[in-house]
Length: 275
Ligand SMILES: C[S@@+](CC[C@H](N)C(=O)[O-])C[C@H]1O[C@@H](n2cnc3c(N)ncnc32)[C@H](O)[C@@H]1O
Image (cartoon, rainbow, N blue to C red; front, side):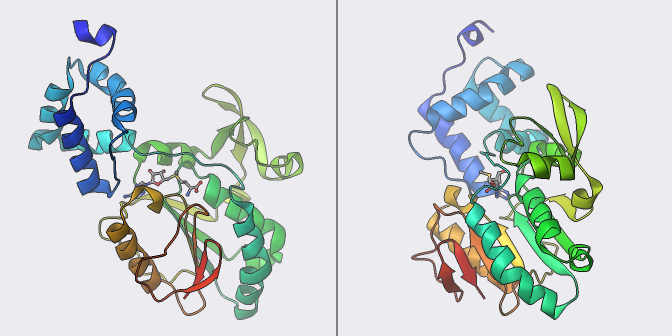
């Protein structure tokens, strides 16, 4: 264990092996320059397993008997940054242009937060729906929220966030939709059932088969595709499109782009597409 006092070194061959596994499983590209990130994120895992070096760790992950470790490794290498009311233009768009048409249509309002991380995105959507929709329509909101990472889904399911995590929520909304609750690291806020009842969390790898049939009135896949290569993005957008009815929307991150990807969606405005 001597080397671990200062941290095990990550050689180029091990980095390439790890990057290939992560790409195969999750579609995530770990290009040159990500060595430091991989080393930092996996260091603790090596220590927990009592392994001295990355060569042994890679062999351990690759061995068929350690399939669980592969999921663990991919989980640790996902980037889960998220915030309440992140990219607020999307929520204003939903409120002004999407909700009114859905209220007029009637029936359930179906959303999918694909790559939901710890739940700030579906929670924000639920809150905006409660604020903007007539009560009867708000009761009809159903949000499927999925992620590859079991770690983030565990927090999402707890619906509990510390002060820093709810910083994007105004005090008025925080009082209305959250109760004070003990958190893992001090005082925290637990979302009320009026929000949590609208959301169903599930673990789903976007690269694998999708059990749900849709349709969804809007799919939010924001700040997820940025980690995928162009071909993977294109396949994904085509699969999203198949789950959108005519007039359904796909919302992507504002720093992402579908340019160069073949799809039949109509560009509405930055980061908003319509089927
Ligand atoms: C940066 S977060 C974005 C969270 C949220 N959509 C937002 O914009 O705030 C990206 C999320 O995508 C998830 N992710 C990455 N690859 C995935 C895959 N192949 N299938 C499902 N989720 C994936 C990660 O686990 C992570 O939680």
